Image (cartoon, rainbow, N blue to C red; front, side, top):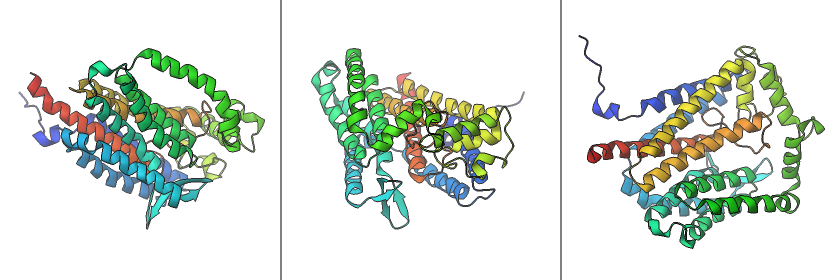
Length: 372
């Protein structure tokens, strides 16, 4: 009788069920970026793999962080990222009409991206210390709303409406998981419906209003504001079932498709790999997100559960908004596709989410023997 193969204890703790699909997705992303660069590993694919390697090391460092350290660092991390956002307003670099980046030598960072997982961490820490009896009182709503509103205001000044909404949605998920009354969310939804028309006419800038109207009718201006969505739909549709073949995408290679290596990398992939490539990408994301939800369900305490649930939601919003955007189901808001788009800040943020989930998964494994 053959003996079962067993891994050493330290290796057995590693969540291979998430990491192996993640490695495959990153490698596939590098192949798409290789094609987007005209058949060259430089400049996109090489830096994509290098960044993933660096941030994978960071994720494994996070994996070993004790729960007490994570609780202790929540508020200092929030304040640090908030100061970075203030620094963007004072010293930030302008690109694409927005002031979103800080540059220190060769390092270029977008602090608003870091705020997404940081808001999840600080809200999870806050609700961990809030007595359960106070859920449903002002203390469960006003302080968390303030923690969310400060960074949202700073990001909105950049201006970056997409990231502002992402921070709000990530925070709202933590509030929902914390058990806030459903009537508050219903009331918030009604208020949003009332505020939305006012925000459209008086709060949005001209280019942001054009994005909304273009989303509703991209063919009304196919060579102007609707160009991105129109070309993305053409690229995705022309791929068919099996695609045109690796390196044979005309939309990206002939520069019809804008940003084929960042925001519209899925369209670049779909043109060359077709529906089958799209199914592979969705399947891998489904595996990763399902694992994240299982980690949250298995968490033994409120802090761990809220942290894992919020980090999973952060990755989900990245994926959902980007895919809806490139298919014309949402306005173009400049949110990259995790682990496939070329971009250092996006890769760092999503690897922070993966590292945080690995961390909670290790806490779960440590608490399991104690609960038996």
